[in-house]
Amino acid sequence: MACAGGREQVMFPYLWTFIIAVVIAYLLTPLVIKLAYGVGALDKPDKRKVHQKPTPRLGGLAIYLAFLAAVFYALPMEEEIKGILVGSSLIVLLGVIDDLKQLSAKTKLLGQIAAAFVLVGYGVRIEWITNPINGIFYLNKLSIPVTVFWIVGVTNTVNLIDGLDGLAAGVSTIASVTLLMVAFRFGQASTIFLTAAVAGACIGFLPYNFNPAKIFMGDTGSMFLGFVLSAIAVTGTLKSATTIALGVPILALGLPIIDTTCAIIRRYRNGTPIYKADKGHLHHRLLDMGMSQKKAVLVMYGISSVLGLTAIILSNLNNFILETILLLVVVLAIFLGARHLGVIGDKSREGKHYSN
Image 1 (tube, one colour):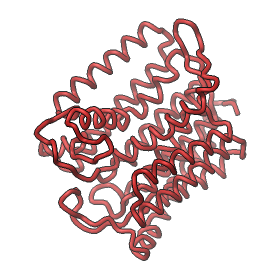
Image 2: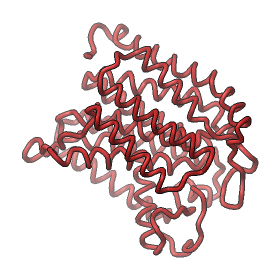
Image 3: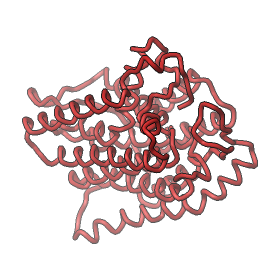
């Protein structure tokens, strides 16, 4: 599909997609709350967690169903769209089981890999990486493992950042809007519809999820959002033959990617397994500084927005030197900020392990 006609004609279908997702998520979430209580899908507080009372999980079901309805309304069932819907449905099923029975990390990882291979089977692949010096580097046989690594990696970064009320939903909204604006510049209509559906579903869910949360999205929601956003990036931005094609989705999803990268470095430096949960994530550090949950979440929204704005600026530069300088400045600022907050490593926390 291609964007055509006047601005109002172009934006109107996208706006309807967004509105449909908002309304359905908003109306479905109270029903999901009742369902979660009925099946006993409750996240109970303990010394390792931030919340103080049993809170229903499974909120991701409302997000997923709203996204599904909006996509069915907006888009024809082309192969890539089918792949995103089938793959994300498998991820949601995996998340529901986990929210009910608490699956092992190994089982969840295998399920994520299986869903990523389903996506690849429908033709959703990273087929090249742009090389500013020699043009395009085609991945060929590496296409499948690189795509699976990207999908599984981003799925887990969003899953890991879901530690405070409204955090994952808000950050996912910002990432969606960022990818939407970049897609609008490149005329990628399908990507605009998909990101509008994700953003709308998250916004419709947020009134129930913002502090104090009436429901958590659970792994059902966080894995779904990570999976679908990573898949949208593959079908959209990563297919743009520009020097910054890879930089845009990495910056759009920058906050969860950075937080997870820092967690891996921190756990390695502290001599703990990288899969072992700790309380060194950025949102934990902000709470340690005396911020309330609401303030910490708003600060992280701000960081995510700055990264998203950087991604949008990057997509409009069309100058390799300026793009490189901007990326280096962002990377340096991130490193200095993470080091100052102790997110990269803190020996004083060695041996103290918490839930994400």
